[in-house]
Length: 244
Image (cartoon, rainbow, N blue to C red; front, side, top):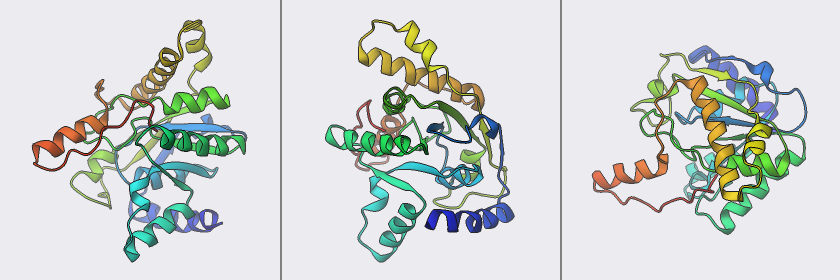
């Protein structure tokens, strides 16, 4: 309920201040389950993308956002849940299975699931290696995977914690669904790990074709670990390939 009430109000403010744009939204089916797979450039992605999509979008968000005990953290957590951001523990094992189950429940209801295959924000604006969670959702549900590129978000957010600059204008570019069946045909008889990686790479190929970003075959989380270590901070724990 909060989502439906807040969305037009929030987007009215966003349009006045930032005036983001979107194109290609006709590629998103009007009904039925669908997976929106986007690059992740800035915190604002989770507002600017679903806010411009006609249908309600359920996004997976890292559980850290929901874990603070201060009044501010609790308020943020309540708002995030209200706008359909679901907490995801990215530590792997049972945590990853719970995240997959939560995402599949969204798709089983015939709704839209938003996911960032990179697993976390890009620390340098490049497109990083995708986690296989997006492939697991696609294969288990049969839902189409629609790729999205957020353009200008990294540059607008650079050096800022929460609110992006007004320029460059942020644009969401939506592409046609990924041809998952062709990938499966090419991988006929292959082991599960290879199939999951092939589908994930096909999704990342589609996002790359839309975004034009420089692409690196390294997880964004690994690069963040290196950057933290170089700054003398704790690098944090590594995330498995299957994380979402």
